[in-house]
Image 1 (cartoon, helix red, strand yellow):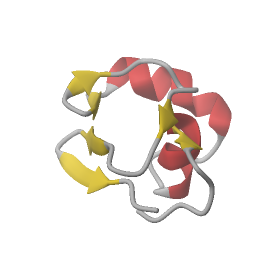
Image 2 (cartoon, helix red, strand yellow; image 1 turned 90 degrees about the horizontal axis):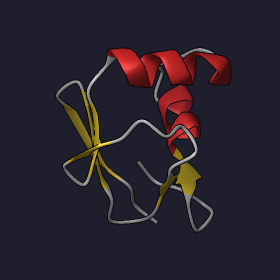
Image 3 (tube, helix red, strand yellow; image 1 turned 120 degrees about the vertical axis):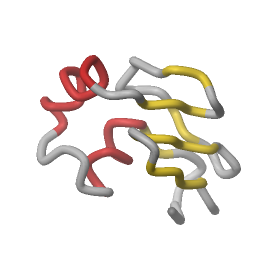
Image 4 (tube, helix red, strand yellow; image 1 turned 180 degrees about the vertical axis):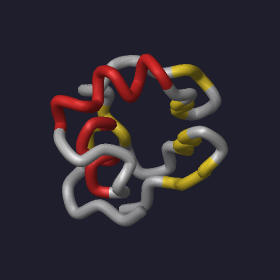
Length: 66
């Protein structure tokens, strides 16, 4: 995924990629699904994702690009 700013929040990433429809769903989604950022389980919806970060959502792997 390419971003225009220096970072994107995990909540915005999930919404942009169709995992959730609204930001309010992110908290529940993160509790119910395996979301790994750089191979570490993440539960914070405001987690900042920077270029080079590796995201794994239930086995779907993506890399943040500038």
